[in-house]
Image (tube, rainbow, N blue to C red; front, side):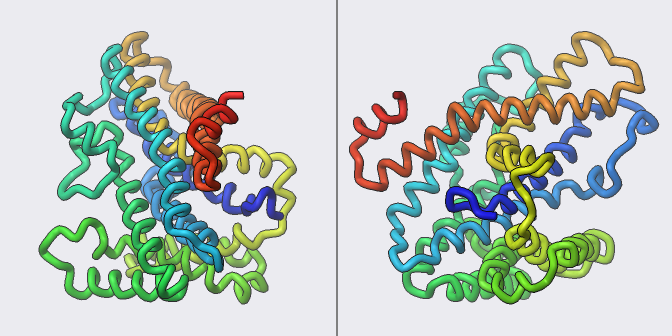
Length: 343
């Protein structure tokens, strides 16, 4: 089912990826609690970070869908991507600085130059220790993927983008360079390639039932983290993204309707959940450690608060900025776009 030019199945995929990452990171709230207090969802406590890889696969599919048009415009593409990523990210960075100043124990120092550079989302060499929002490391890879698509697609189309990604992955796997390549020569691009291939192979893959593809995709991730099979996780992402993109389910019915809404706000959740972890840590430290049985209720309260805050960020920041970007690339002036935005 396609609504307003989008695939609701991919919104559900985004929701699942964001919730998995937030669940995985939520264990930081309870770092000093006895392990006996937890009843984790199997696999997510140890491997929830794979939600980021799944996000990359979704991006590969979505960017291929966006770029695969006869009237594809690099200027419009990059402008829309800018308004999609940067405004809400900047707002979350400012929110993180504010809560840090108010006493929340964020494990990052407020230093002007590192913060200003991190707000560009340009690649950096070394750890993410200087980033006030550490999860934003993945956005650097997103930025480089967008730039790669903008450079390649006008000349070689989507199959060319897949070929270039494949070459970069083989290079990184067979003979990784010793110099910094601005995240271009990295095996992590196999997840973007998975999404690109899922798009290119969407027609034959739609004949395979989603309830077959999804378990196969999960098995691919299992092979990656347990059997350590190279690139099997990317294959799992390809199959899972294909399943949800092609599924003809009733996305307007509960609980899928809620997941679609969470998917709309998944980018905001991905950024905000890290800040909220330390808000919870600070509050718990001030009121005293709650009873042991409350660990899981606190975790799901944390996820609920993250969802609610993300809905607000999407409604008041993310969606208006996306609409502003769309109006600007259609040729309207800044004054007209801002007037319509604030009506």
